[in-house]
Amino acid sequence: MIAGTGSNSTRTAIQLLRKQPKTVQTDFFLSHRTTNKATQNGLIAHYTQICNSVDIPAILYNVPSRTGCAIQPTTVAHLVKNVDNIVGIKEASGDISVGAKIMHLCDGNIDLYSGNDDQVVPLSFPLGGIGVISVLSNVAPTYVHDMVTKYLSGDTAGSCKMQLDALPI
Image 1 (tube, rainbow, N blue to C red):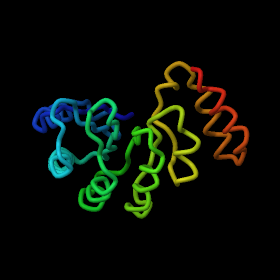
Image 2 (cartoon, rainbow, N blue to C red):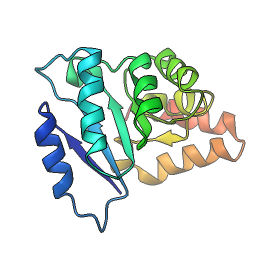
Image 3 (cartoon, rainbow, N blue to C red):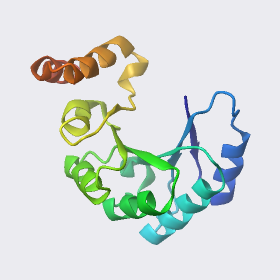
Image 4 (cartoon, rainbow, N blue to C red):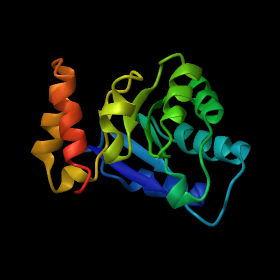
């Protein structure tokens, strides 16, 4: 289970996270909200303070189309190298090269998840990613599971076909 925690207020994000039931929570999911348009140093301070307030693995969420502010690959690398419980990122910038830069700068020491259902196969696996945190899986969970399983079992062509066939959805 991954609990979603995000706020443009660092204090509010920490309060929300501490209210999550610990019995079902294994990771938490962090995003920053719109309106702040934080600097990269501001994002570092925000995420560092939140992550240091709890002892739970954290997954960053880079979704600039919704937040108005991208988490730059150098910022991700800084956070991964300096904040012990940041273990992953849901990369949803839409730019596959961002995922490649993150993996390079983090020396592969981050779990990379596709955050865009139309980029599961190209972003996740060839770059060393491990899967997807999917919207499509809410309406087609078996389909997404099978697409990922095909790739992991060596059926790249079958997985790619499923990726392309899912685009209209």
